[in-house]
Amino acid sequence: MTDERDIILRAREIHHAYRNNGVETPVLHGIELRVRRGEFIIIMGPSGCGKSTLLNILGLMMRPTSGTIEIDGAPATSLADAGRTALRRDKIGFVFQRFNLLPVLSAQQNVALALTLRGESVDGRATTALERVGLSNKGHSKPNAISVGEQQRVAIARAVVGRPALLLADEPTGNLDSENATGVLDLLGELNKTEGLTVVMITHNEHLTDRADRVLTMRDGRFEEKDEG
Image (cartoon, rainbow, N blue to C red):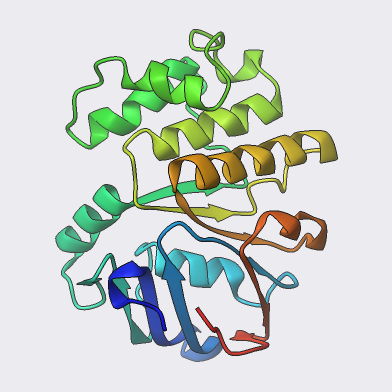
């Protein structure tokens, strides 16, 4: 039996529908999920099955139509926007398919910006974060001067520089070739195994699943099997 104190993220009966011009399109249907501290979970499924919508809800960037989310034991669904923003800032890091790096800033400045926006002192932490992802020699390089694989590593450094309890990754290898994709997955696996970072990653690529502790498959807004986390 799982100790409730080991649960970093819990989703209960998550339903979501998009509304457009009075038309409601259901996307998620009663999702249940428990993520233990230190787990590496991959959620996979075809395009349009609801993976990204679910990740946005888990990351408190969207509110579900119904259902509840808890992050590190804190009920998040009922919080006002300011409370949700603070909880997301303090507990969650994000990595996306598109790196979302600011082109006018160096790698180090892109990472440091994440701390500045949190109101925290940089104090060499950006440099340390880049060292953690194997880019200690790229700190002064701008995004257009480094490879796409290195850009994603900078994005990962930016996501983990604040030491989040949970990392959510949305198709982080989607824009990478197979060699760079393998490198990024190796990096996420290393952060998970050596530093205990909890990772929830979504992908449609079944060849990337061997790093995971658990693989959950979504189809038509549901997990194909009951989550046993």
